View 1 (cartoon, rainbow, N blue to C red):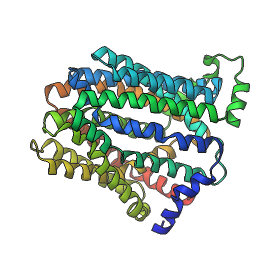
View 2 (tube, rainbow, N blue to C red):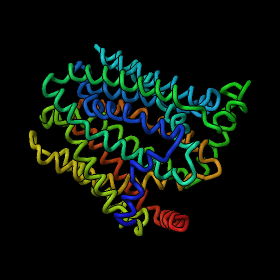
View 3 (cartoon, rainbow, N blue to C red):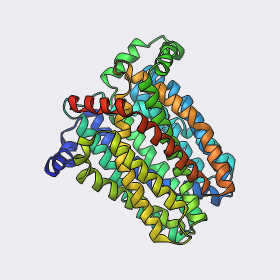
View 4 (tube, rainbow, N blue to C red):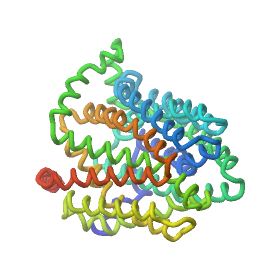
Length: 426
């Protein structure tokens, strides 16, 4: 894809003007969620530490979130079909985001964060229902454009992070975070109300509500046992499961313990946590626009292996960095962004290609339950490791990266077939 074609494909104004109905409402209101989320997210673990939670308690909060996420993911499809996309999204967005924002804003101790994690885990339900609202009524030929626009909204939202930088710098961490969480409650709740008021139930949603009328949630979930057996009978889906699980665990560890390591061990001021995601987003966007199209001919395996090696080297570089060395931390961010750009798009595409198409929806939902379930112990484990030495959670990431590197290296024939299938389908 040429630069001119890329720019045409990502013409935000034209796409926003032409897309209609639920997709338009979903996209227009999305900044009300993405902006506040990106403002507070880099500081959450440091905020918990400032309120005297230990690293192991922070890890336990992460595991609690994963536990309730797994339960929510299990029921998400059935609830969405039973209540409808619109009602499910409003109800569970309020439970999963509005209530936790208030709990985070007024938190006093560990138990406030545990309660917030339990509510926040319900977001797996709205991951399904909101996605259905976004895509089920998209006009023909606009699906890719809608997702391009959604991705760009997320990237542009990161550019608001200097607001968090200024707040934390001026007010100190805890009062600044309380303000950000109250703002998040207001902004996100406003989004949920607008979407409910101006959105409509999708055509597929109305059909499923009619079909499931009078059925219990358990009846709607019938057939999951057979899907579970099919997942573990397929080498392709086991490979997809391994890739998704390992990358999910690594993402969880970095999200929860990067801030603690940077501020507690490397002694970088807390407000700089708002700067690093901006640098990372700029590098990733530039890579995806200018370099990624030129790498398509290399398929999955080689770019992923190179990206994983870069990721491992970058993580080693991070845990070997001296205290107060801002330049080495910026170098790590650049390395990490490069590795992410090489690995993440291919990992996402590969996990979809490896799933049996005829049962993609139910298989994907059940696989997410399995992934979250397998990830639960690693939040607490990473917390225990961090209590001993804040470099150890990243050593765990290195070990997991080596495992997935071996898996990818050993899957040469299968990945070559996947690359060929994708080229033939494109």
